[in-house]
Image 1 (cartoon, rainbow, N blue to C red):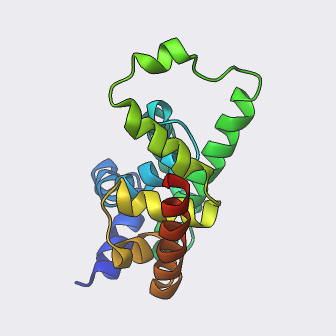
Image 2 (image 1 turned 135 degrees about the vertical axis):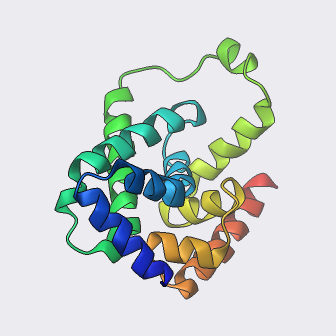
Length: 166
């Protein structure tokens, strides 16, 4: 059975209420979803939002018509969840310097801030590669992008990141 056939079988089983099949889908796509969320929201909130994305997906999986579109569909749910998150937080203040000083590895959070300031196209690909450890081909397969698009986004994104890091 090919990977595409296996994914289609998992999607169909999930649509029929098989939670174990949906658990397997979670295992396949959780790193990608976490990376997409990190491109849009603070690190501390990405894990909770990821759970929300998969709960929403589990409730709506019967609406997915094409099993091969699972990665793109989940990515879309994640991006929408990030937009909703930003709308809710708009009136709230950013972390205070005192709060940020108590976080571990402040340098990592500063790099994440720089990554999150990059254009969305590059930001997601870079976070999936650098933070989630996904390969270029893996990013392409999981997100539904072409290998060439991923390669271009990673290359251009790395150039911008290097410029911003000095």
